[in-house]
Length: 401
Image (cartoon, rainbow, N blue to C red; front, side):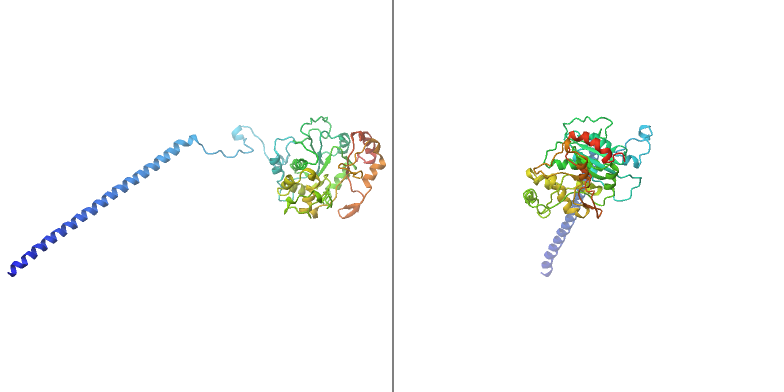
């Protein structure tokens, strides 16, 4: 009985062991198959990725002739003996310093950008004769040009002339005149409009392109000199300050023109008035053409009865350069008759006594010393005064000196 009971258990055990062994073998084959399949799939995907990358590279190479890379910026000196077979010579400092022709094709943005460039080293690496730039803001011709011709005669190389006139005006100066070929690209200017300041900045910017220009004086077609060139040149070149009239004036034609929309950059206490006719040194001229803060405010908010030409420079100088300014103008004008325009002088009013009074009839400070030479120029003189001025100038103003 005992032998019979143990035999079924042994049979069951053998059967179970056989099934378990089969399951292990089957599992091993299954895992092996899965691993093999995974390896094949990964290998196929890697081959596809490599093939796609090669196709992309081939495609980019194929398309490159249709979309070439951008060309490098054009050089200002493209010509060379290797490329042209012609020796262009050495391009040195002399060529760099040579100012462009006054009648150029730069727009205002390009012009003031170029004019705003200033060397950081104060010493000049060349022999520099400082010049005075005479900036004439006119409607048409310089009415008293023959007088100015005598004023400038014999002083070539010590001055520059720039004329801004209405674009519709056709210049007719004779070739022998100092004004011949000195007209800059201009735009229309309206009395009392902010575009008058734009014209003044345009004159300054053109003059700044000449590195030799050291002093800059703004004049009109009705201005005359009160002294000979040597005296004017010495007065300006040796001055330690600029000459921009700037004063605080209460009332409707002073503070009454202030626009509160200019705050906080320009406050009512900073608002100033002064004559349009300025004289300034090179440093201040660069600051004026480079101004991107105050000038846009005047363009936007100084309109109609504001008269930007009487307020922009006086206010700018007050805010930023007051210690470098004399707060007076060098151009004598008669406002005694009242009205929006100064008095205009006719032929009979021009006498030797009258001119002497303009030359030495007041007192002021020059380089911290008191002097009676306060005005170098005067306006407004009609064309009919030319004959008398030419008659008196050689003796009174000593134009031959």
